[in-house]
Structures are given as structure tokens and as C-alpha cells.
Amino acid sequence: MQRGYAYFCFGPRARPRNARSLRPCSNRWLLVLAALVVALALNAAHAERIKDLASIQGVRGNPLIGYGIVVGLDGSGDQTTQTPFTVQSILNMLTQLGVNLPPGTNLQLKNVAAVVVTASLPPFAKPGQAIDVTVSSIGNAKSLRGGTLLMTPLKGADGQVYALSQGNVLVGGVGAEGGGSKVTVNHLSVGRVPAGALVERAVQSAIGDSEHVYVELNSTDFTTTQRVVEAINGAFPDAAAAVDGRVVRVRAPADANGRVGFLARLESLDVTPAAAMAKVIVNARTGSVVLNRSVQVESCAVAHGNLSVVVSTEPLVSQPAPFSRGDTVQTERSQIEIKADRGSLTMMQAASLAEVVKALNAIGATPQDLLAILQAMKAAGALRAELEII
Image (cartoon, one colour):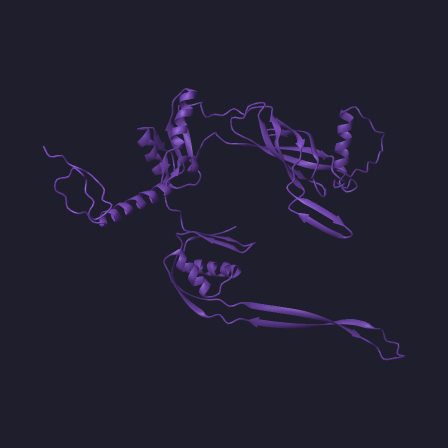
């Protein structure tokens, strides 16, 4: 019985030892194999985990907020004459600590600042767990560097206290001034207290209250939702069903341990998301323009010219003749100059993002010019993308 052999060729004359009659193999098989490997690598790189595309309904954080005081500043605190709430907070705190000041006492403090403390209560947080907090000045303090945050209760949207914060404020900046000069590096009126709050109350999660769990995509897309359903059913037959274009209902084990393991496997499944919708994002305040790879432009001609109006005012002094009774009067003379740059007509016929950018650069369009050009192209029906202005 003759044996069969499966082997890879690494040269035109490579042969296995036990082969009886073999033909020299060509390097073209290596090219085919390399192309196959590259294609598989690209497909695998494009696939994303469900964890990166969606979240589990009910698993979310909750914002917390509180009002507190930072003490121990090196003369960079609030000016108490302009921030009376800082003095009132100090007086209330001293009263609670058993220190009673005479009525009408005028405190001139320089090392105290009123702040707002914010944090996010993570899902499944339990009492005693430490979370980070952000401390932001609400007065006119120059810097929070070196300060200490006093015990501050952090409340949720329902008004209940869920955490208590206290600790040394860490500011990632430095500043100095003197003799009318001032140097500041980074932002000094906002700091952070790592592990600066302890959770006092837990928020109950509804993830285990029913037979199903719900997977919510980060953005609405029917194609991606359908692919998520297919990926889940491929690993867990008949477990998932789409509710709408964003939510997928998944049947999960009833016990907590089995449900956690089930969700861990579910989040690790790979899904290839659908191509994003063609969109152009324009920031009118900064002039930033972002186009995604799906943007296409129909045939059109674009001419853009800049119109500038310059108004200059020159002060003039009218001096009366000597020994006259006239008064010296200051007048102004204005000059108005209008300049209009010639805009050349440029033909644009692009089918890809690279060609769109090349065509817009050809007419010398700046980011500010793109705001007007893109709006005009959208109105003319030449821009095949959604134009969103933020």
C-alpha cells in the first residue's frame, strides 16, 4: 500500500525522504500560502470582541458629587472677601467641631479653597472599596497644590450618600509669580485624590433578576447587531435574539456563578462590525474637520475665494491757531479696504477619501474654508456623507 504525503515546499527541488516519485514544486505555492496567511491576519485584525462593541445592560457606573474644603494651601487659596461661601463653610465646620467664634468675626484666610468633588461609583462596588475622586476649585483659588481635602460626603442623583472622600490632593502642575511676572505649567485649580473615597453604600444591579441578559451595542447598526446575534448563537445555539437595531436579548444561566462565566465567554467572542456610515464631522469653534473612509464625492466644480474687509482708524489732533480761543480736539480718520482673492474653478471627481483630501488641498482650502466648502457641496448634493456640525 503506497503512503501519501502532505508537505510544504521551501524550494524548487525540495523532496521528502520517503517519497518515491515527486515532481519539483514551484515557488508560486509559497506565494499563495503567504497571501492566504496575510488575508487571514487582516480578517482577524478587523474582528473585534463583543466587549469592545457593546455593554451589558445594568452594568454601569453612577456619578457622585459633593461639596468640600481643601486646606493647607501655601497662600494660594480663595480670597475670602470675594468668596463668602468659603468663610461660611469654615465657620460651619468649626461649629460642628466644637469651636464657637464670636458673632461678626471676619476671617481673612489664604490657605483654604472651596471645591466640588466628583467621582464615579463603579458597577458592583461594595462598602469599603476605594475609588478615585477629582477635586475642582469653584472659587478664585490660584492653586490646589499641596492641599488636603477634608472629609466630604459624595451623593448620588437620589440625594443619598454613597461614599466619603478625604486625602491629599495631587496636582499635575506648578506655578510661580513675583514682580508682576507669572509662570504656570498645566492646570492648577483641578487635582485628583487617588483612592480618595471609600464606598459606604452599594447600588443593587439588576443583571441577575431575570432569565435573560441584554447586550447593548455602543451605536445603533442593524448589520452589526445581526452579526452579534450570529456570533452568540454560533457559540451558544439558540441563545440570542435581536430586540432592535441596538439591543440583543440573550438567555443566560440562572445561577450567579454560571452567569458570570457565561458572560465572560460571550464578551470574548469576535465579531466583524459593519462599515461605518459615511460622515463628516465639523467643529465650527476650532475649525477641525474629520472625514471617515466611507466619504465619497460626486462630480462637481468648486471655486472658493476669500473676501477680507480691513477697517483701520488713525487718530488725528486738531490744533487751533496760536493766541486763538479754539480748543485742541482729537479726531479719527477711518480707512476701509476690501480685498477679494481670486478663486480658481477646480473640478472634483473623487471616489475615495484620499482623492477627496487631494482635491481639497488642490484648491488651497484651509480648515476654515472647508467649513463653507463642505456645506455648499452638501447643499448641492455632491457630498455623499452625513454632515454633522459640533
